[in-house]
Length: 400
Image (cartoon, rainbow, N blue to C red; front, top):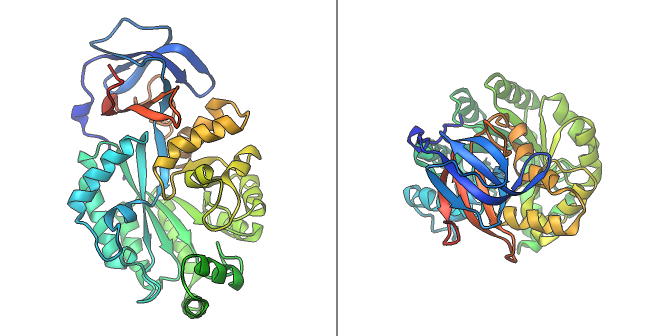
């Protein structure tokens, strides 16, 4: 759907941001400047520009393209920081939208999970009707959002009862990206029964609870009709909606996803799956939280290793928006990969994957002025200002 920012933001004023280290697709322009007109990048200069109705002094900051986050599922925690105490969406959405600007995210694909699997397996915010109400609220909120707001719907294929509702959401273009999940042990992130039991143990559950949950999952999976799942993916493609797989753990699973027409592999569990996805021309997505923590919360591969080995093409926030900025600069310090290539993992590559790279994702003349200024001397790094369509949607006292 991708409703743009309100047109009133694209003012006729010419804005100039001087004295910044501009990170373009190919290089870094030291002590450069960017000229913005009608919300788009009109020119990029080496040296300061005097042309402009409004002029900002970037004070030597890095200028990066705004982060394009195609998988951010932290909205669930924002809605219900306590599972039994959710807040009304009319309060949460403006507040969370504003928070994202402070982390340099200018395009967000809010990740919602439809996984209505019965009383014991279903998280409250993942019930069918609850997900539909959040989607409705997000679509209503889009025109007033500070950042570009989109919806990434995750579908747990064990939830066969929700398939009809999901198809209606796709047909009406109420979602912008769809990923397919299967959390049955042996079919996704959990490579076998023992892996699932160990995960539940780490999460504070008992082995008896884990075994009961596995039994229910296996029973639900017997009802799954993969032909209907393939039909769903085909329907997405007919509507121009990109599809992704989730937590593939073997090259066979990746191959199966590719044959169904899936273009993106989210969080391949191991190196084998990541290699298979890249060899098949699929984008691979790993989490910024993994980068910052140097650890996968599920015990899988390190995002930093995947980047160094050329097996990661996209970084998303996953469950921590803060981790986008911090993850970028952490891998910058730990690798010898050119900085523009690293920045592309957070901006241009995800924009390409979801088909919006002609509009955003890099600092290029003609593209939308979705920009982030980052203080160079701060540790950890800090966002000084965030621009969407050339308008400052977040700024600190360091921006003049």
